[in-house]
Amino acid sequence: MAVNVDIVYKTVLLILNKEQRGNLSPDEFNKVATQVQLEIFESYFDTLNQQLRRPDNDTEYGDRIKNVDQSIAIFKSYGNCTYVTNGGYFNTPISSGLSNATAELTGNGTATSFAINSITSSQLASGTTTVVINGIPNLSFIINGTNIIFTSPPVLDAVILVTTAPNDFYKLGTVIYKDNTEAQLSARNEILYINKTPLLAPTLTYPIYLYENQKIYLYPKTITSDIAVSYLRKPADVIWNFTIPAGANYYQYDSAGSQNFEIAKTEQANIILKILLYSGIVIRDPAIIQVAAKQVQQETQRSTL
Image (cartoon, rainbow, N blue to C red; front, side, top):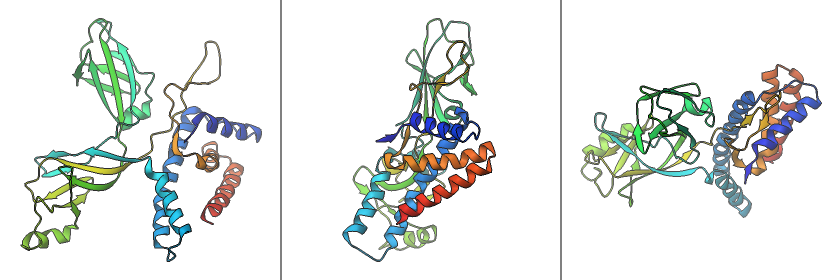
């Protein structure tokens, strides 16, 4: 079960206000919360490596490995790769498409610029945006902040569907050829030797690959299609979306367009502590930094034990 973004934000504000330590705007919170979630997500792999190096092999050890694996299971994805003819390599999938943000607009026959209220500027800046007008893909546009600007105005009453997919590829897993053959990873210094050795040379039945800079080089080189990969995606950016009621001077939570934390519910206390730590940095209050850092350290020690 995901950690509710509204509960976390309101808890952080409650603590900050109670201690009279300042405030944290929704935009600041979203940036800090996204960074905190990514740090906790990346810590899973350090924890997993530590557990794998432990000499014991009892049930408790197996449970610890299982717990970490369960924490990252939600982020496991599968996608097809695109072959780049000029480079002779396959690109890894850019987006899992699991946390797409969408907006539906209506053309009036004259306007070329439209405000996109349901997709944040950070999502638009870091993701891949596609546009479909009346069922036909459109490439003649640019994104400027939270505005989309078309080269020519969409026709009157045109249905404009804007979709932003996050570039969330994180870590490569298994490379698969034609859905049933797993390619074996090789290092660059091994490729030349393997290709020149008849008994070791890769075949369509036993392919190998080199992985560099999110590019997959398949051997034998005759493989130019039918490559898919399993991989881990990054958590979606945390978003506490809001509206400002007419005549009001406060933010009102809007679940539409908001994005909860994707890491496990058990991380809620850790998330709040780490956000308080960063909040002290944003607000430049050394008291918050000191208290939050101490509590995060204690929480980390308890988790390790």
